[in-house]
Length: 102
Image 1 (cartoon, rainbow, N blue to C red):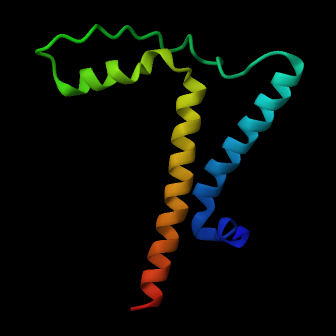
Image 2 (image 1 turned 90 degrees about the vertical axis):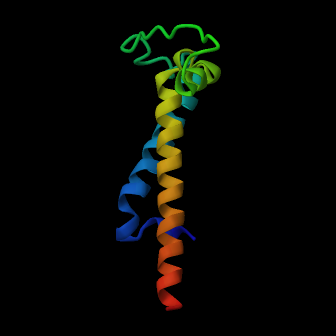
């Protein structure tokens, strides 16, 4: 299973998962020290999203429903990197398996 992560075609996805692992180690060390690094970069994007009325588009309603402006930037980055890494490795393996059976 670990040899899949080391394949050259999975390099971008492995790098993304490695960054998430580094974030996890830094956060664990920070918890032992008594501080958190998840709030780093939150002040860079101070976006005010208006409340949703009944006649607004579904995109604004979805953003307001997910509370995107209240979640730390590092959490969004971690979720994106995890999704990118796992979906890329899974799709690469599915394509490789489908090409073998052709």
